[in-house]
Length: 278
Image (cartoon, rainbow, N blue to C red; front, side):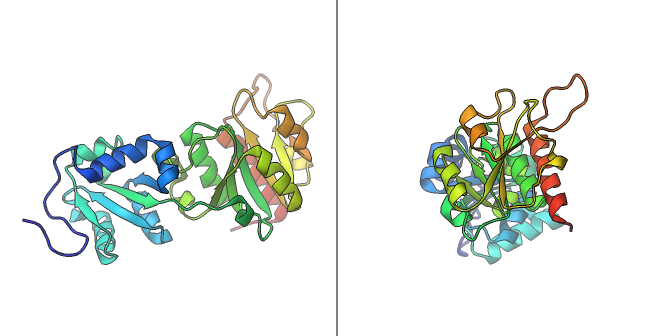
């Protein structure tokens, strides 16, 4: 028997072929489909609470039976019901078929992506942006978004070769920051002149010896911190487009930092120079 209340199904789904499960698996696996349809998969209790608190549009909730047996799960289930979000009870093992670990959390959401056009991100002129070029690892990309939000950046721009900031793994690493921070995607060929027109300088991270230590660079004016992939770094044309190149000093014998760690250091230094505190 099914519950007739709007947005609720009482019968527990036990087939992996249920349309809601097939859609969730497809979206989780296919970045092109996520972009084309403007959707994403977010799973886990923390992300569910963040999505609800941020006002993110939630298209559907897949919930394990008994989610409301504890206080946190009860809050999530109650708020989903209060907002009339379509909720499908799903056997926990099937949630793991969407994303490993989702069964223990008991909640998978199909959400609408929030994406900001580059021009909107640059108007009015932001004081600090983070640009990611060629950052494919979703854990690094999500962690960079989390640090950008925590350390005062107005937004993040993903450039050529970067992964999808709305993949479920990137969203997990961002811990809800992607629901609150403005995120744009652009080619470098479009972004570089757009930043120049907006009066925003580019500060590029480099491993080369000619880079200025961050604490000796002036990071107080409107700027975009630009980081590239670990190992190969930024391409020459982007380094040449930068008004400043910075290099993080390291101990003897060390030649690189995780790109998220480097981004966090540069974001902190830019905030320190601006007197940002919370």
